[in-house]
Image 1 (cartoon, helix red, strand yellow):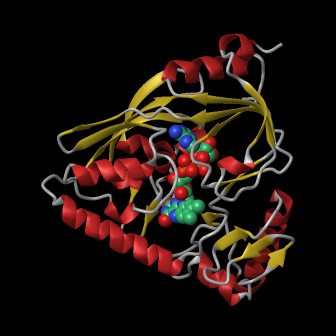
Image 2 (tube, helix red, strand yellow; image 1 turned 90 degrees about the vertical axis):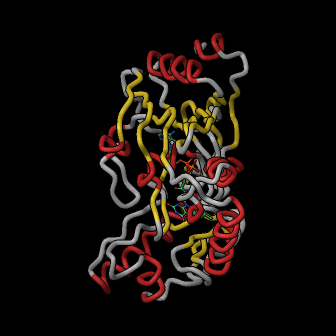
Length: 299
Ligand SMILES: Cc1cc2nc3c(=O)[nH]c(=O)nc-3n(C[C@H](O)[C@H](O)[C@H](O)COP(=O)(O)OP(=O)(O)OC[C@H]3O[C@@H](n4cnc5c(N)ncnc54)[C@H](O)[C@@H]3O)c2cc1C
């Protein structure tokens, strides 16, 4: 029997992952644990490593396509949610919902984050993935962060450490976990005005993006000249369907689960589109949404 159960009597087995993602796709997790404290996170990772159990660290599930075969390991759901405001800085644990950080900024008259209003998911994933909109990216505001490295040691790093670029940070290769991050914003804003800006952002988002079960933009924009949505549209992608996996008619870079789509259907649809774009434009589209395979090796 796994030591996970001894240490965490609340450990669950056979938990469906689809409801924990915005695409609503994904089979069952062999083991499932929600963490609210960093000590628990470290213990869970340590035991999983000792027992060679693969781990997937889940935030808000808004940027992942989880295998319909499930996950043959431990899924750790991040609910570490302490947050405080110090002057023009916000220090938040990674499991805080990004929307709560944006709200805290607004309430305290801190300017900068309003354009990100409407982006789902956790603060930690946004810091790791440099989540953003044309006006700004999360990395623009990061001052420092507490990470957990592969040896389960904490380290405090500054912004440069992340090596930020478009939807990317060095953490995507290193596999380090964001435990907490500090962002710095402009002080002296008017909460009412910030709220108005947030509402404008939300309205424009609603006008451009479809509701429904998706993971947001499926592909990264390959160049400044061509957006992924433009390319998918140009190759006749809008409305294309494999089973219940569908390219939105409203926004060609939104791949939707139109019913009971499987990860295989979503991946087949993505392959077809990639093939067409490669043939017609000689551009290799790259997924923004991360595929979580069912049987990864333990690291
Ligand atoms: C409707 C919709 C609109 C969207 N709009 C935008 C947008 O405008 N801009 C944009 O950039 N994105 C957008 N997204 C994508 C998504 O919201 C972001 O990528 C978000 O940051 C993902 O956060 P999450 O907590 O849901 O991450 P998850 O999907 O849970 O995880 C994504 C990856 O991050 C890893 N991860 C999660 N937390 C941590 C952590 N603390 N430390 C290290 N790794 C971690 C996970 O292991 C996984 O590999 C949109 C998504 C949807 C569904």
